[in-house]
Length: 299
Length: 247
Image: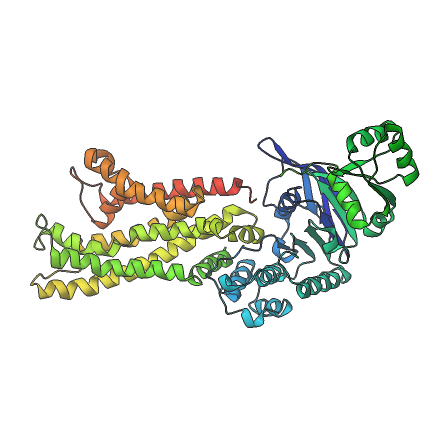
């Protein structure tokens, strides 16, 4: 059982801050969703945690120990980072045999994990004939080989069909319910909303929010969406009144904490023409989009 | 370390590319023998000591292929992204490179032994048929065979080191082919006193593949020079692989 701790972690590539003073924890017995738009620094963070990328500053530890300093790390932490990390001409079973051999694991583990990810029948096939979903399963099998207490999965739902996603959700939930620690990344909150207990949201390499999913849901609140040709004038007027608003399209403005009354008043004040005004209740996904939109992604 | 070496050998055995390299190295032996015995060489006829040496140099004719095989052992891991998992299992990347060097050396010895056996078993009856009798214990036979047993493993190890320096396999291959076929050949042609110190020059001194005007290095010096190149490449490769960010 183990806790993941990221503390003041930064990574600069040239003059780009891919990860910027990031701190969060992932607790044992829980699934932590690591969320952010593409290019937010999720993969770089996970790779620093796994000792594959050297941090510019800060630390990333598992139970207080850096991955590289763990005794037999492959038997404590299982990771799935890429879907194409296989030699295309190698058979799936051989790929796992190589990992088992290097890690000093018995060959029986290969059969165990092939069964666990439902790839027994494809074990003798060369990886180049595998679908993306099958590669994901093989990647997961590689991660599970050492029977680890910690699972780190980068975009694990990518390429899975709806059945695969459901299967993965069940698998990850069971893993955590047995006391395991799971940190999984995604760029879509909806994809993992039914899987995770906690969320860590980053944008532009910086932490935007860390909370339980339940707490994030309580941020759900009413707001107003307005369609007007004078978005800029209305936005300025709202800002003067201390009402927060965001331009979401070239003629649409959203004020998450306001009321139709307040917006109507402000619009009348600047003589803005209103084509459409709706009172809305922002759901989880919108909260997520709003949180991550506050900072510009890197790419 | 034992586990890591076994894993490296398993990595090789489980790809078809490896067996293609082995086939290439084995096929070079009869081809090279046919060139030296059937076609012949006017400067070094089979009746001379150099002629016999040239025939048995077939044992190391797969050296360049062995070097490319070594490159696939290290650069291939970056090409197919398998390096990520390799480093997850063994975060101390120096141990990974060490295992590759040792596994590469081991494979090289086996390939050299196969090439040597094949050379002797084809060349001896063929030469006999052409009324050339060779004493298998003479220096003209023992030297190129011993040379092959040294140069093939060293070639694989040199490849592992080069692949550790140039992580793009295609670029590494191109550089090696350009280096051996253009740069080394012209240097050896124009400045033979430099050429004999270069990897191919040293390998030639071990195997007796071709001669340089002004003479090759003595066997022992060539072995030391080639080992030096291997060690430098392995150290440089280890340094660069250890510092590489696996993004």
